[in-house]
Image (cartoon, rainbow, N blue to C red; front, side, top):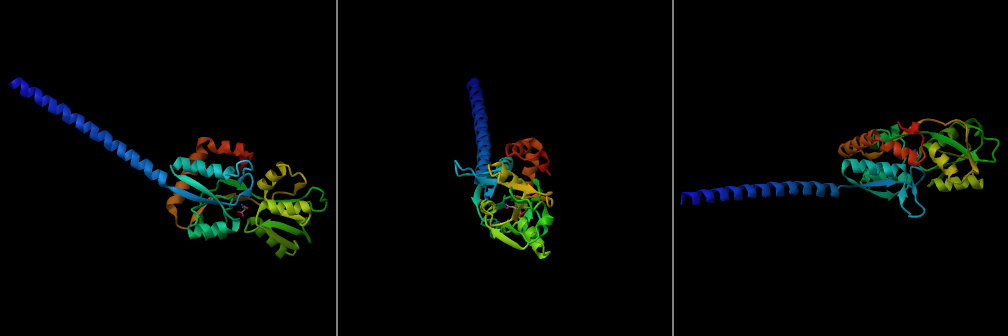
Length: 271
Ligand code: GLN
């Protein structure tokens, strides 16, 4: 009789322990599931103007938006356990869109500058950039900024290139500034001869020339130095922190250099 009770006690103890183990494992699973679920739900909308090769442009075969900025923001998202959804917008629509909450992030080769920093918050810089002057290959008169006297210059709307061209106009050097929505159009105007010169980000003009448009050339020195940052709505410190943390990790892991190489950008493009 005694033996029987002892055995029963043992059975109960084992059952109890088993039950506890099952509960612990189940709870553990639950937490993991909840965490994964929450991460999957965080999808940030990223706005970009995709005529800016190699930073953002349409892959002609797949019609998908690709480029250095796109890969970088995706790598940052992967580090941070969130997702991004890329959406095409006009360059001048990007800041208003992030301000109104239509998008969460601007990833569009956007230069960090004082005026924009009053409207949006920028991450740490992720690319060193600068403006270049381009003319038709056959142009023998415009060799640098100083030769822009009386010239018609094409720029993209809302860009630092547009600001620079307007500055040169105010100084009485450039005669006329023509503003276009996209880079492909303003480059076409230069090839057609509608305009004398283009002021645009150096790496983008270089990439355009390399992609089979050798009827255009860059002249003179790089006109200035700039740095690109991702932009978020003013005061969105949580997202800004997530992007900066991810950027730091991607820059430390070797992935950043891999992306520079993939898009044929020089090592000194790294800030
Ligand atoms: N870097 C330039 C600017 O911020 C041009 C950007 C662009 O055309 N995508 O104004």
